[in-house]
Amino acid sequence: TSLNASVYSGEVIAGGDPQLERALALVEETLSNCPESPSALLLRAKLRMIQASTEARADAQQAWRRRAREDASRALARNPHLASAWKV
Image 1 (cartoon, rainbow, N blue to C red):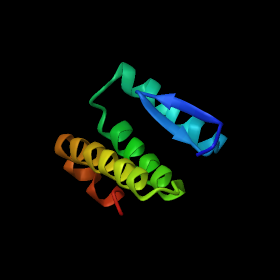
Image 2 (cartoon, one colour):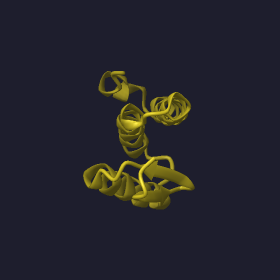
Image 3 (cartoon, one colour):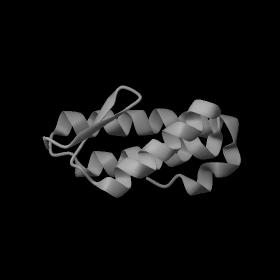
């Protein structure tokens, strides 16, 4: 893992991609104000899938993908019309 890591909601984001880190920080801020926002949950799910693809370790990839699916499931339960936006 990289020495450059950030923490969002207790999760360590390795790799140091500043755009991904910034995007995750912004969506976390949004979710702190509106925790059940379907759009924000779906965006975080997509960002977590991107994070999974950058991980070298298989266990880390699986963990990020599991979190992404959990976010997507919550988002789609609240707004099923977003299903077309969730393409994995």
